[in-house]
Amino acid sequence: MSNDLVPKNHVEFNEILSIIERARENAFRAVNRELISMYWDIGAYVSEKTKTGGWGKSVVADFSKYIQTKYLGIRGFSPQNIWRMKQFYETYRDNEKLSTLSREISWSSNVLIIMHSRSEEEREFYLLLTQKQKYSVRELERQMDSHLFERTMISDEKTKLFVARSPGLVALRDNYVLEFLGIPENHKEVELRKAITANLRDFVLEFGKDFALVGEEYRIQVGNTDFHIDLLLFNRELACLVAIELKVTKFKPEYLGQLEFYLEALDRDVRKPNENPSVGLILCAGKDDMVVEYALSRSLSPALVADYQLHLPNKALLAEKLRELKELADMESDEDEDE
Image 1: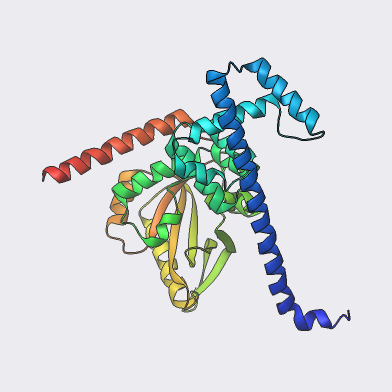
Image 2: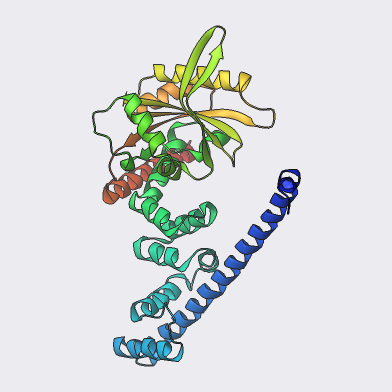
């Protein structure tokens, strides 16, 4: 093949590569579904035998040895994993929706979700998230360690209470955990921005894989004056620009005016005709929810205020906060019905 053939036909070649990659992915998914279905059937069998057939630890250990004797070199049939198959089956046997979802992700991810999720709601959240974002086990583990489920639920409840929902804001939360940055508690905005760009892969993981970095200190020109947006991202699913302003202090209402100015400039001069209106996020070191509510109440811009923390949150405290917010939302709903 001559060297000049590739440049001439690279578009067609890439289309063929796409066909190959799509076929490989479909094949992997099909194999994975069969593997999970096999584990499901084994789990169902062992579950029944422990109830009616007298199976216990010693029998399962013998079963494990027997399989490995019959199929030399086979992996995945340790006694511990066989008990996990039983737990997997018993966890999802009465929930067809979740049992179907479980076949769309890897066995290792399934085990992680079963071991660390406390409710069906939490399991469904991580099953859907892993399927949609195509998380690796390491990526899923990080999200679970940062208690993404509780943080997302809290953010949703706060959004219901305080923020007029905008289509672009559903991809954003009101709190982010940036423990991977490795910067001191007392830091400057430039240190925060540089640490984020130096750890961009983890930063995008925290925000969601549909986000991609457009620019750091992104320059926009209005009149004869240059302005710089701390971080400009693009969300592929929402097809819109996302402007992020970083603040190492507690939220102040005047920060919103600056962000709204940037959003207007982006929509007038940067946004492409096929893209949706830009959205904005003020990421600050802290915030008072009531101050945020007042600041956003008159704003027509699709903007959200979030805070960040540099250490992993406490799961128990998050769960309690979520409970309080749900109770508050229920109280307000009851008051509306009484009226």
